[in-house]
Image 1 (cartoon, rainbow, N blue to C red):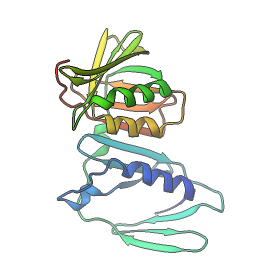
Image 2 (image 1 turned 90 degrees about the vertical axis):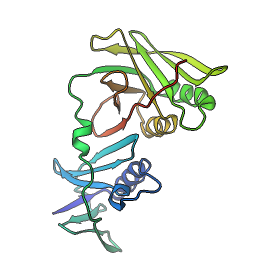
Image 3 (image 1 turned 60 degrees about the vertical axis):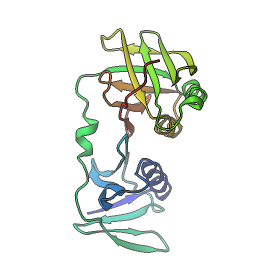
Length: 221
């Protein structure tokens, strides 16, 4: 199977999805990206234990695109000046499609830039694997991080829809910031299943670019 993909878009997508890959994995395939033919284009997915990233690239009909060919055991790239072929990793990656299929969920939306700045500020007190806690209510999102005497908090306007009066998710601040920095829209949407469950982040359009964060255990604040 062969595609023609814009080379700049492909490079950016691979770099973005690679940010969630574990630095070291005892199973080589878990350190790789999953590439799939989807809706006439290419879907790229990566997964760590606490985060998953997925982006979909449409096929490009322009001449300056990059040809990409997939078969059962290798992948090839061809541009105007170079041609590269590499073998695929042995083994099977986890089912990313099952993770991204949320079913019934609530949706919270807030402005992207203020949230990114707020996460960066409160995360200063989140030592080690300590999470940032986001509690969404009908008209606000409350951020908190840290424990005991070293706690930071902030409140921002937000909208929560889906029937719940409030929903809380606690996530790794590094993964959360990576996700927020990858969006270019004015707002970000959180698709929420409930306390202790995964949260799906998208931009305002909610289409090609998606980032899944696993909720982690949060200390009592």
